[in-house]
Image (cartoon, rainbow, N blue to C red; front, side, top):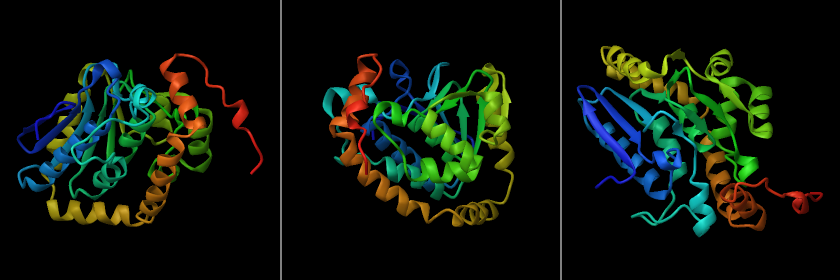
Length: 264
């Protein structure tokens, strides 16, 4: 595959996947997701790769989630070779790949980008990084791993705060809630991530594989929730309510959800 939306390199035993759409704050479209899946599968198949780093291009954003401007323009996340928007499969692949995945969060980790770092095994945060959700503000949600697994990481009360209020949190606040593993100066985030990758490369690969599957076993049932949530999101995203969020974001105005309030 000729990559357009990501950069991919293998340096020794470390594969580095960089979301490379800095003009859109590394927001992903369908092709971006497809390319990340391809790169992760290459990393899985390469026996010399012992760890994977996921990061974003530039110094402003790790990833700000699905490209809402694209959705406002076309009603979807654009074309892909498969014809599918496979974000659910990307989430599952980050969990299933039997090698440690390290998120190097170099800036904003917002919305679907926040979900990506949560699903990585560990997170190295720049001191300039910021974390948060936007779903209910832009007519979107992740009622699968993005919410259920997040609650396992930070607790039910905090997870509901993150999703319902759509606030942003500093790297220090993220560290205090157990959302990241360590904080380093922004200039050092990739060096620190590579250091963690090199250290874990010295460990038994079979032990790491079994341990990762063991950690995942407790929450694997959430894959069913994720499938259901993605099916619901497909329907919701093109509804009047869902598109109001996307159009408001693209037009840089507050969304007007008032007419969608109704008893259920």
